[in-house]
Image (tube, rainbow, N blue to C red):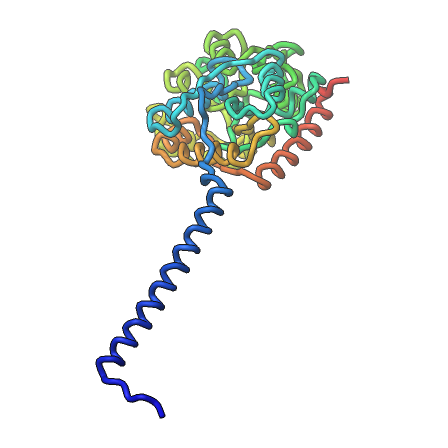
Length: 356
């Protein structure tokens, strides 16, 4: 026969059981937390995202004053102005060998994330035209920042008002009369010149210089008859009334309608196709790292240049320089590079510029 407990005894027994359960639960929680702490100790602290620990050398494989140089120095300024990186970007021009000097240095800096290079079309034309042992696949693609246009320019005091009129004059003149200035030999400027020669049916005397800034100055000084400079390389001289744009080497006009001179915007310049000169060419403005860098290091620079492109400074720069504002990274960028290399190989084979 079970003993009948007093209500107070039953209450005390229930309370004791509850306290025992609570102590057991506390011990189990404490054991679990201790185990998690031990595992965390084995795992180590969470890895921080990579960022530069010293100044980053920003290589420009072209001369001072040209489009690549101007863009690199603009990017340097925006990064500093908006404190987008704790370490400074230091622009260094390495134009030797049509840019081969700069590319070979970056290629040799395997695993060094403190060196980047801004690329233009000599990424393709220099190895194809000189035979220098280098290919873009031997570096690490980061991102395309934009595509750059080309414009056919003449001196503002010349009598030519349209591209067709100018090329007709070239055709009518004796051979080796008209001079075309450009950046480098067997590079994009000379490739375009060969295409214009086919339209004119007459060869230019092609005069190479180290950079687009020098090229523009030669035309201002009337030492040559024309150039195919990028917009940013000649805009100051156009604004100053020294140069005249005849057409943009594309199948459509540039979209920018803000006035550059008192009477003209970039959009007022006809496309070469529209002017009866069916020649077009776009140039890469992109960023590469050396080979052998890590995904975190690539991601840092992709993010850095996304931040640059988000600033109002970038919008203003793109409009004033008349760039095609095109951003690519990852596989999309790599695929584009492969197609661009094939296109340049074809163009240079047709021009007879492939190194033997």
